[in-house]
Image (tube, rainbow, N blue to C red):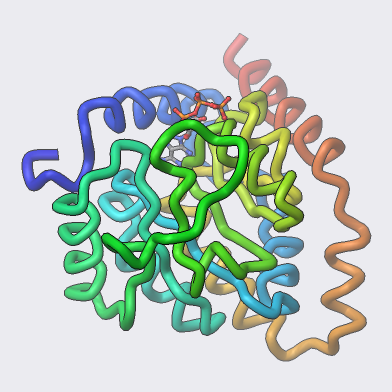
Length: 228
Ligand code: ATP
């Protein structure tokens, strides 16, 4: 936050996430692992996959996002709720220092809009989210997650809260901390890359997001029961 990558509101969102991380035992649970396989399959089958990055994601898992981008050949797009061109450039250059190639969504290059969103997060890059068929949305807000789905894009949320609007709107929701979920997604992508397309299709068709979210809640209850 002192470098300007994360805004104060981002710290509040981070705290909300941490509260949920406590009640799942701060480790990756089976429902998240199942969602990660479906997410990797979706990203590998996509024509134009894009990784959407905000300040919290850059600060918590910048290097991990750069590694995932290389593993699946997907561009990174900066997309901020509290958008200023200074902050966009700061995040883009931070990611480039960590090894990212071109970073989309900075300044005037974010010239397309997603309909149905009032905030500045409606701005997208026509080379990135604008033409994407699958978008990874870590720590997303509900309005934008719902609007992306309405626009016909498949979305992969990484959100510790299985009850959030984002988790419910996404095609695949990984209920886990970005610091664990993104490296796991990179590993799963390398593993699934070796598989045939029919196997990848099965990972996606066998996955039911609503049922998986219910499993995440049950796993949290089980964990808490251990303490009760
Ligand atoms: P929604 O609008 O989707 O109903 P919200 O208003 O809580 O939910 P935001 O504050 O915009 O949405 O998004 C922050 C989300 O990110 C929260 O759901 C929070 O649980 C989640 N989150 C925060 N930190 C992390 C983290 N480190 N890893 C994964 N998810 C996180």
